[in-house]
Amino acid sequence: MAIPKAKPVGPYPGWRYYPLSEKPGNWATQLVGVVAGARPAIDSATVIGLTSDTVLQHLRPGLLGLGYEVEGGKTKALKIRRPVLFGDRGLERVAYEVDGVHDAVGVLLEVEAGRGARGNAVYRDLVRTSLIVGARYLALGVMRDYHHLSGGRPIDVASYAETVDQLDAIYASGRLSLQFDGVLVFGY
Image (cartoon, rainbow, N blue to C red; front, side, top):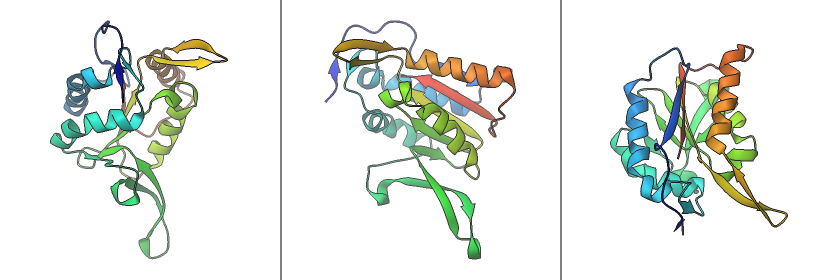
């Protein structure tokens, strides 16, 4: 169970849309509105013990209202799979699981918690999602702040800021071409 911490600080949620030269579509601002509405339960600056599953559970009602399909649990029947490759007789050969999807718009949603800060989950999400058939946009949620212990000492990681830095570098360098029309990163 998540435990409230101190009073929230700054605009919520933090978010940025890529490429920076394009205005975000309505889907992006609507998704950010869902995140803002769930703030009391998911604000990583004020709530202790968040997991990606917990955050997704709190976002789920609002996302369903926008037409998203959202993972409902960890059993196979409640997971969401999207194809990457097809094989013989046109059958799905390779597929990846995603946290949420809006098929009509082509948005795939991934929500990361602590692992997203230091476990390269952001890179994995960028690559895997770019391979999914029909993916036009990636919406990537990461903690604004991740706090943990390392060797008994408290460590604070600015997950959202680090993710923005990674995406800024990817888009500015031009050396890695992502197969998306756009990427929305939000810090919850």
